Length: 174
Image 1: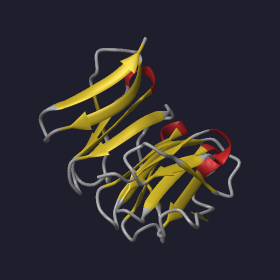
Image 2: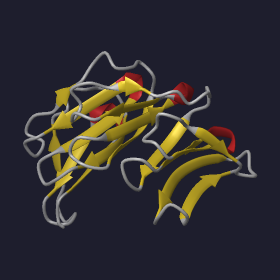
Image 3: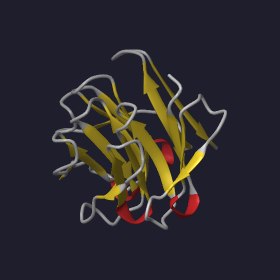
Image 4: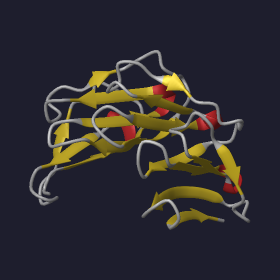
């Protein structure tokens, strides 16, 4: 596919429609640092960032709509498994989930105050979240219950990806 988005400081959102040869600045109407995007299709994309910023476009980025009042925590990653269901993670153990394309969001209990940096789901039930002090959380029921897994590190974990429910990778720094 040739369509992509990237985000950055001061509400920066850039979109490409030619595989990255050219990037077009889009108006986010946010001045917050944005950290992550999740593409649903060629026109629908989510972006998240500091101070609980959650943005959504359904028209290829011509208009970005802010979803407010969900959290004030800095958010680090957004991950949508399909058009309806997605998760956002961030500071103070924040994980929030929507099952109705962002109309409503529900906070999930993580039993941690550590920053959750990255979140990934294989399907609607099996997911992992990683972050500060080597924390790895795992759920088998869509986030109703998040259980801690042993990482054998206190390093900051930055990203997580799983090929299936048994094979996955986590990266970080020390």
